[in-house]
Length: 289
Image 1: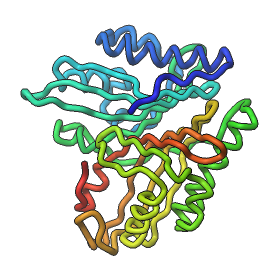
Image 2: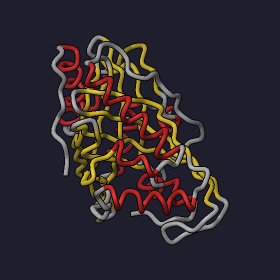
Image 3: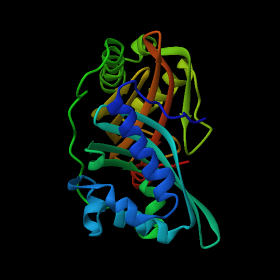
């Protein structure tokens, strides 16, 4: 299941959402890379070390992906505009060596004067590595919390999500999960439809996860909010000292990045979508979708 474009009521949010949507679904989908370059601000800052090390900048990196995939198609799955920032999921589809390929990424842009001025991302590098792309050493700097004006509801929704990461995932208070999640909340993963939904399945899954990674901790690096949606970039860290999902124990340190979007209803999470960089799981010897 995917979400349509979520557009806030302010002219800034509406305008920035349209700039990013057009960049992906019209310009990149049409392979109009020269036009894409025109949408980059002169003072643009790139935070992905893989893109920085490639030497061609953001548009050059997109060209490289297009060169690897025949008949590349680009689709925006989720989009949340928040003042001068826009966070979204992107699905890249194409054919390589006769086989269908799908790449999921999450993108965060800061826009200035209608152009992309800053960029962070979460990329499923398990797809890129077989293509000879990545990974690169180095991390991406965290950003501030919510920036600019927000409604009381948006502030409350952001606080709810941050509280869940702090108490449930880092402090391992699974007994508090019902404070943050509806009993029948829906969980959507873009790469697999086998992810269980509902609070009971959620608690069972993370009980196993915490048993395998007893030092599991999360760091929310970016957060945006628009209406009933909150979207975050998160880093998950832990040491695989137990068995989990058919692998371990290995004492391997896991550092995995995800992008998660939440729909909040009645003060609790009603739906959750995610993009995951599964390369970290592969490197720890764990199975991936």
